Length: 111
Length: 115
Image (cartoon, rainbow over all chains, first blue to last red; front, side, top):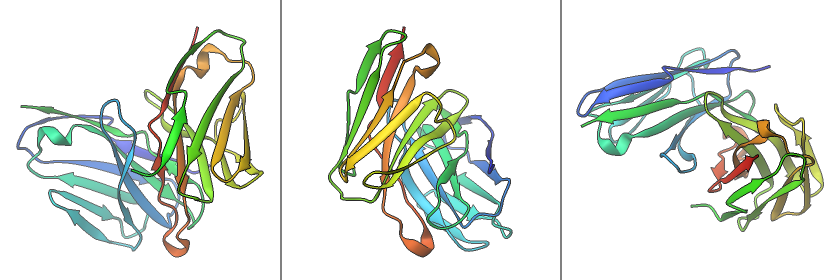
């Protein structure tokens, strides 16, 4: 079946530094989505990427979809304590199908 | 936040007892899902529904059953709870957007402990 892998599993970041988390699918995706889950909370939708090579920005967050539509990345610049949480990517093999979630990257910020 | 209510939010139960978790939505969305979240495993789909009385299995469906008799309610039942079913359970809803696919909205979660 379809597998979605995320690396790293944990990311310790100094406040103010940048970091990137990566998402890789075993199959070509129709679209990829990113979710954020704060500690003790529920996953919240951040963004969806559909086109090959697509890049989208949300303030300090930059999301990219690979040319082959099998991988994605999330880059956060100038990390803040509000960025703490677990970031999940989720891939959809065909539009309207079930999402497959990656294992998540848990981000911890050192002040 | 999407109008999703899960109940109970927290439950401790004994091994071998049946447990039912309820998900109620006010969005009239077609699709409803039950996920479980465990450390190191992320979010795994248990069952989902694509309409009233229309359900299908996810990747970790063994030991679970679901029912959807109304658009707004999706029930998850553990027929005979085991310790391996101790987890956080999330209900989610979506309305497929066709070309761009589903965006999922999650409920607050139900913490289940089986002792």
